[in-house]
Length: 280
Length: 123
Image (cartoon, rainbow over all chains, first blue to last red):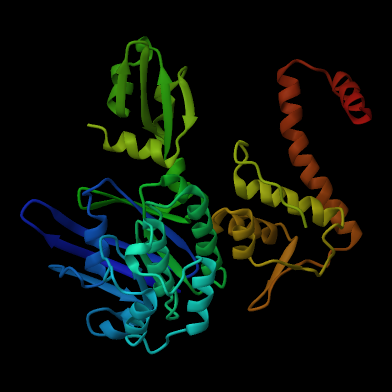
């Protein structure tokens, strides 16, 4: 079932524009949302939740239109956005008590399980938590009201590798029943290599690609070669080509691979693709 | 059921999973009519995304190794040993065809190939 559908989301600012952002996500999958700082990831996520008022576009969550059924849609979404902080002097349990009143389907059992899993002490104050613990606390809140869709803005940044791994495992557990989906933005592309089924790539406010991860990865190859191998024809097809003292390297679409015959050709990972696509 | 994946292998993940499960069904390690775990559980356990597992399962179904019962999961097809042998042979045939093409490109004669196979098999 299609859990999330974003159609032609647009928002114009003085110096930045979100242009016809469209993508969709079925239930039971994890989608990674990537792009440079300032590419429009957070603006997209916020406009989806009506925290930023888009100029146009349509969001559908589990078949319900976000505009006309905002309340139902929001019940069905757990979100964690960066840069939103809780009252630093409050105890976690006080914040939870306030938060849970907003949700009809608050799941106390799940909440307690999250606290235990994340080793969170409800008696602690927010300002006593590390960056990682704050992320985990907001996740605990997002996970505790039976939401089908999780929208997370850089949930893994600021976490150590062990906590990140733990979080990814939790993501996979969440989608195990096939009913839940996760959309998360990140700069840590290795997190996506591990668990994402789909990748949505945004550049300058436009969606460059939204597809299965392996399809996306297989679209490109990395090319390394000697200066003399850099024919004008090849140079035209190379993406983010960097010439150096001893040769050149660049990204090429798999369909153009014949032009690079004789060079070293290797599969590209997400990070390499991103670096080359963004290189001026 | 055992699945060992290699992230450095050139073989795509779904193919690695498909081949290993195929082999275990053919040898009877995974008994006929037994239920395969849900794809998302396999993905979680192996810490890979869902899609390669889904593709492997689809490939198994296409090959007649498993069948799906809506709402219940995937089961190993009730293949008779004759059918299993046929499937085994056709898998081996496909692989061998590729390999033989390579040996021929090296200029080996059939006799030489057979000699090499014997040596490898007995090692």
